[in-house]
Amino acid sequence: MERFGGAGYEAAAAELSRQQERHYRLLSELQELVKALPSSCQQRLSYTTLSDLALALLDGTVFEIVQGLLEIQHLTEKNLYSQRLKLHSEHRGLKQELFHRHKEAQQCCRPHNLPLLRAAQQREMEAVEQRIREEQRMMDEKIVLELDQKVIDQQSTLEKAGVSGFYITTNPQVCNKATEVHWTGQHLQPSVDGRTLCQKPAVL
Image (cartoon, rainbow, N blue to C red):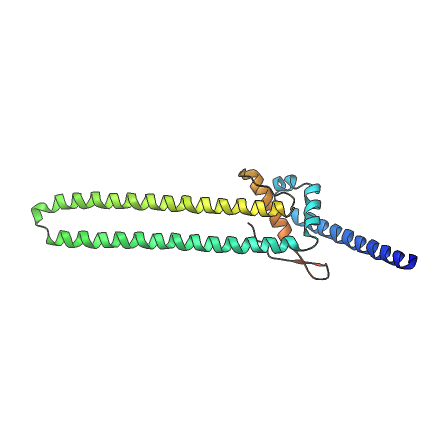
């Protein structure tokens, strides 16, 4: 029994030692990556923050979570971009239709009525352009709101996962810091045997 107990203790100690080595290696790599950031960003990423982030990266779960969040974000961005392109296409068609209608009306108009017709058409065109600007503004506001909500969803998910530097906030400076933490951590992708590989950065 003592022999088995001793073997179990040695195995646990060896595993703990491996975890500590991996943590130290991840922390060292994070510190090297942070050096590439602007000095103002480096000051906000303390040793404690990086150490906590290294701990969160040990089992690879965080990478899977981030990958899922990125896929959702990319789908959202693609959908919003498609909506904006569709609206732009509709507006372009509307203006072209109006232009052709105005041109036909002018061709059929008697010369002495032409100034009045052109004045009325100018007012109509200005009204349409105002409508287009308003619809574009509303679309842009919708895009910003949806992207802001995605940021909040990402913050909440990563906070619940225990990732250092993340919590729900709309403070731009805090959001920038969280982005820096994510950009730094996303460079490290653990492989099966615990070694780290470089990965193309992706910013939320």
